[in-house]
Image 1 (cartoon, rainbow, N blue to C red):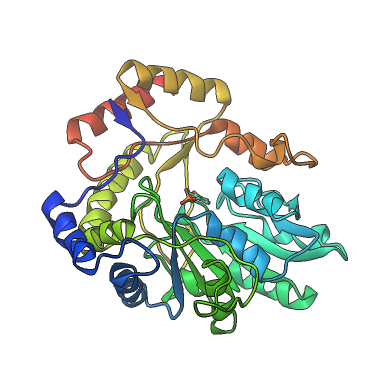
Image 2: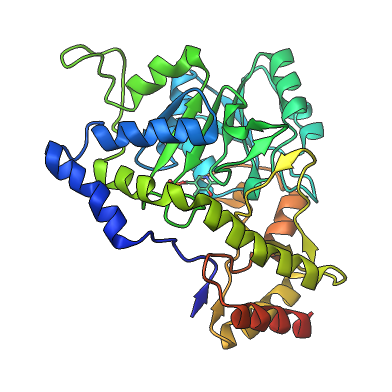
Length: 356
Ligand SMILES: *Cc1c(COP(=O)(O)O)cnc(C)c1O
């Protein structure tokens, strides 16, 4: 059976050797040596000044919304994973959806200003499949209307835009280190922010503690544990191998679908992409369903990702978002992972091509 992704596992001994150090300290969490070492290694690898490792990629979004003091309406994209929208609602704010660009699949920056009202406090946008939003336009709009900007950069590990880590953009960026993501710690994630927000974000992720007996502010528990950090430290040395191996698969897909009716992701200019996903967009949902069935018959299980369009969630009130809804109904992510066999890749491509 072939799924859309397969978690990269480092040699077990390497993981255990790192984890052994947690036995030596006797600490399993509360920011032990492994979490601190992972943060230091990631800072260096990613070239980003402020990082807080967390226990998943969703809590950093909620903490960012809370710590930046966002209230009322937050402008966001309907084409992302549910965590982007649910975090807004969970923090008692209202998501105001703005439709997406039909090729980049990121929020359509030209439609943002029309959605701003006196109640708007921020923009939460996703660099979807690692494709950067139009960050310059968003920054300009945010400055003009005094809005905070959070980027859900869950898919963006290791990515650069105009030569700089994509995590350095916005007031806050977040990443997920979930086992299905490019770099992982089993469950895990991180928050990246400007220096001015660091102390507040840090305090929020640790119950609001300011030393053992003082409390800086309201907080929650989003701390990463030592076993999670050990996995990250064991996976990190393999990132070049992981990215190169995925690039090979992406090159094969791109070549195979070049002259077909399939639409593939258009990566924004000046982007050093990370080969995190290979989405393909069909001409119709009927065609998509036909291809999925044919792939399933060959034991291949791609994922309808992202589906449904988030403006149709039962707990939001939104007008329709025609582009996002149309794309969501026609898009799947194809299998892409280290160790995907050449013959399986051939099967996937053949099945798709014969069913277009
Ligand atoms: C995976 C993902 C998240 C959530 O990350 P978790 O680590 O699973 O909590 C948030 N946003 C997007 C776009 C994602 O793909």
